[in-house]
Length: 147
Image (tube, rainbow, N blue to C red):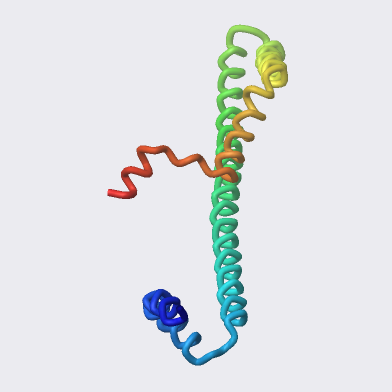
C-alpha cells in the first residue's frame, strides 16, 4: 500500500525540484508550508502596494488636471467678462454693464448650487468608484483571453 501511495506522490514531487528535495531529505513539511505561505502573503502584499500606487497616481493626476483646468477656465472667464463688460459699457453706463455680468454669474451660481448633486457629486463618486472598484469581467473578455 505504501508503494502505491509513493508511486502516486512521486510524479507530483518530481514536477517541482524544491519540493522533491524537501520530501526526500526528510525535513519538516510544516516549515515548507510556512515558507510558501509567507512567500504568498509577501507577494500579495507587494501586489496590493503596487495597485495602491497605480490608483493613487491616477487619482492625483486627475486632481491636478482638474485644478489646472479650473485655473485656466477662471482666467479665461475673467478676460471674457472684462471684454463683455467693456462692450456693454459702450451701450449703457459701465456700472450697469458690470452689474449685469455679476447678476449673470450669481444666477449661474444658483443653478449650480441647485443641481450640485447631479453636476458635481455624481461625477466625482463615479470617478472614485471606477478607480477603487474593478469592473466585472465580461464573458467576451474571458473568451478573448483564452484564445
